[in-house]
Length: 164
Image 1 (cartoon, helix red, strand yellow):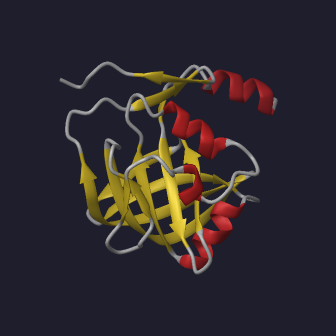
Image 2 (cartoon, rainbow, N blue to C red):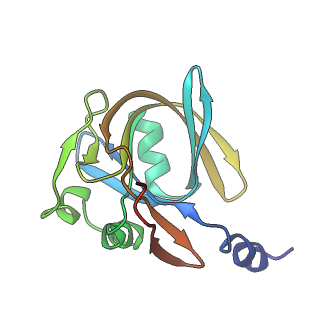
């Protein structure tokens, strides 16, 4: 199977959209991710797919902590900002967006997201042209129960109806 055929097939499956952020000694970095899955409730673990040759994986491995904010309906512009190549620092991209810092990692979490997870890197697992970042969830600094999440379907961001 060609990578193109595989990507086309999986674009038919809706995926939640999240922002992964890492705070290192120099700056805040962030990237949009659509491959986030719950792995374990005890201990609380999630897995996130990241490009193997990208700086988010490298910075995450070096720093060892991060935050994940599940984006809400209406935040497609933010998802696009963080998925483009050559983007500036996360703080610059969020100049007019309310955010705070996760208590443990110090990484940026969006105040208007559906939920945010403060995480510690458990390990990186090679997976083809990506790595799976297995993250231990240490806190949930933002939770807007019932808020509608942003989805990605067929290459586009799609707002979901309200969760109520």
